[in-house]
Image (cartoon, rainbow, N blue to C red; front, side, top):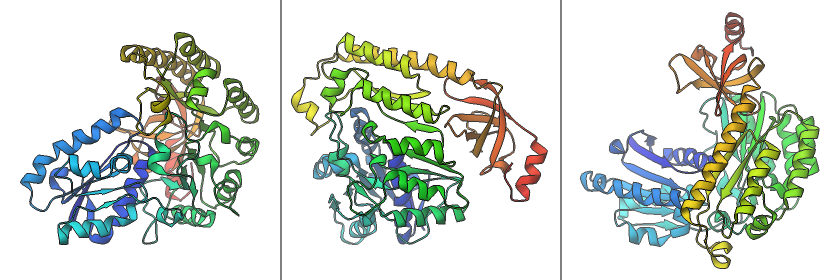
Length: 454
């Protein structure tokens, strides 16, 4: 039995891609290991959305050079967004690298590995496909790792925001057939999955690029009807595609969790225009207002970029203002880093000094930390339903799960509750998570043993 080690950078889409890599290479008898030292094949699944993530790729590949020299027959490969972006340059810059595969080419990996093993070749596969079959899981039954599962429904993006490299490394929008998505989710629920996360670079534009397909709200409605499934989530969304029908889905679909990640990027209209985001601050806030009107308890998260090209102090102040106005439950925030091929690199100077970017990012994070802590403290004393995912990493004897609003809750309790929907009373809060206590532990354990839900 050969051993496979994968190091993954980036988003949930990359995490799911790594799961698919394990599955396709199982056909060559590769089994995953947590140690690169024990591996016969090392793969790096990369991200190039920000410069820092890209630099980590070259750092990791450099660390593995000594392993390559010490272990005869060790194969090292790179895939994902940096591989798609750099292509053959990666092979030239890293002489001990054996193969490079792009974002559409996971299904090609068994063939590529065999070329390295038998021919000593250094294959490279970077093709984009216009048929969605490359997204399908090979070999039938999907793998299950706990009560939650990722399901890719589309890839690529047609928006071409000026700062974003995604269209260049993931291609144009392409949606999987809805029948395949529904079949996969049914198989997952039969294997014990209770919650699915629907994935796509612009997930709520599902079906737009193909004729005769369901719209995204229609797909959600079909998935909502799958027996045995308890929760539906999705990421990542673009504000332009937050349609009235999708807003209504939050009010009518009982399995659609009350959480939405809706990247705003900036609170300034002039910055949004330079970013080519396609909406104004007012239009974005109007959608938030309508969403909260139809689903009052919805939790919101977003992305913020600090120090975009040309950002003035007044423009940055508008971003702080939108954080105050919306009061997100959580944000993902970054300093702007110019990415190759993007329009922003060609049109604008990266003229905000790095120290100013870092200070603005720190201001954003301090403000959001205050907002998140205050909002989480409002949960203390309430009763929440969590889907228990397994042991907590914070404290021995704790289990961890998520509320429908995507809040992490750590609770003292038995691991036998993993995979169950369990009611807890919230007893404490930090900016990043909640602390809880189980309700009626003995009754829940009896119900769980009988195959029910506490």
